[in-house]
Amino acid sequence: MLSRFELIVSKLGISITEFERQIGVSVSSIRNGLKGNSGPRTELYAKIFRRYPDVNLHWLITGEGDMFLHQSDRGQQFIVEETSNPYQSQMLEMMQEQNEFLKQQVEHWRQQCERWQAEYDKCKGELQGKYK
Image (cartoon, rainbow, N blue to C red):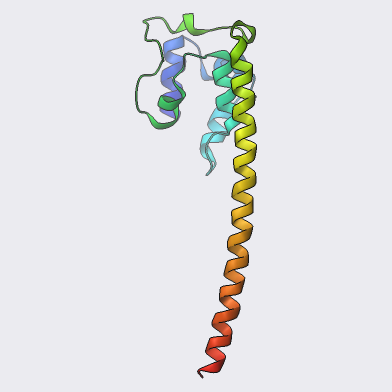
């Protein structure tokens, strides 16, 4: 995935450090995020989308499709200010709400699985005690 970030910044004609500055993350955030097991966080993608709405996030995450939603020889034209798209803030807010909801669902089901595992272990122990 780092190579895709490098491709984007190369197309934009800037360094990864400058890219990080433009999207509002600390220096080395991208490299550090890629080193972790979980990969970059949702907030990073949201910040990229805010600053560069024509970067194809599907391509950035999976490598599938085109780098930009609207292909052009000049990546620089894709730079926009946050206020240029009135629906962008709403979309990001909805994505963040959905992300929070999904986090809650994952936590709920993780806890449920733990309960089921405990119940399974209890039943297994009782059955083993009966048939010894």
